[in-house]
Length: 334
Image (cartoon, rainbow, N blue to C red; front, side, top):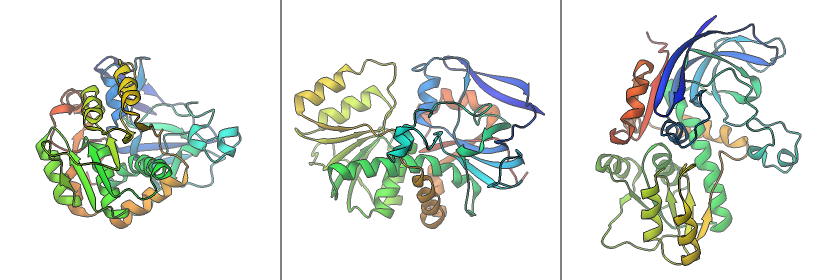
């Protein structure tokens, strides 16, 4: 089977390549990608912060099963599935401690390619069959929301009942934090800030949040940095009070981040750096939340682009007004 795959072959450079998928291995599932959200990690790779070229990107996907390996029993053809970013062996010390998102074999890579492509063969352990949704594109929210759920679990270990939270950066993760904290956790005092006014206005209107007043900043039980930028980290740390509790969701690999350590030491900040999505149960929680609580009006935060425009979308990502960008690969309605 011919497969078209968009490889990141260099900094800020996608290349469409055609390759043949081999016969399906016994423990694998062949999937056809439908939609895939752009993760901050994808974007940091595009910017050249991680440069092990060439490689494929895209894991916030929803796909359709087209073939199953002979050892696979939990999936059938035409099932809709999403992916867990992690491989979990369920045997290593981390898995046995209930920290399977830190599995020693996490990055083993049991897949032919990631989701900016037509198809992939993926080990069944990565996949979850999803509950029916009114709009299948909303399934691209499941994996990133599971990361938000894990981050909040870590926040609660430091502050079980935060009353006042500031979210800085209202892209994919920041927007989902606003949704989760307002709609599910029911925190009353959620302040938000983004340097793109349209993103901030949309989030405040949809999720009952308050815009940050830069002149009269208040104290926050937690500051959540979801900016994915050095300037965003500078901003958050500058407005942090002494002994501030601080959760960083940004991907700043490959950059000089010594200022973060220095400022945290100077102000005796309590930092959290939650990794990925925690326990595998968070994927299941996320599915149910999206099915039960994500409303059609919230879809105004999302914008879809055809995969043929992937280079242009990544190049212009910082100027786009949508909170979440999604690559459309195969539309079942066509």
